[in-house]
Length: 87
Image (cartoon, helix red, strand yellow):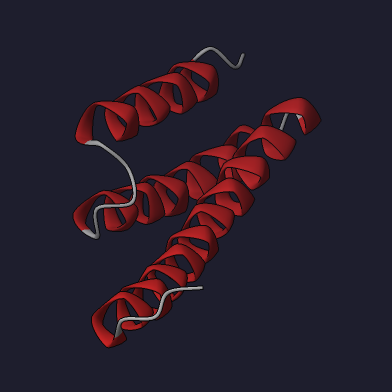
């Protein structure tokens, strides 16, 4: 454990930020899972609605610095491609 006051503060701040990032990542995963579930069920309308919500969450995570912009773009692209490929 750190002895210096500023080092102790850095540890607390790092834990807080890690918890926030983990919560945001978890939320994105949940929304992505909803899209994938709709795709496997074959419900295109539900998949498109879920896709819009997932893209919104991915973009929010990107603006908060949780995801790199290229990572977010890749996730959005793959989800969109999967939804558009549905019959």
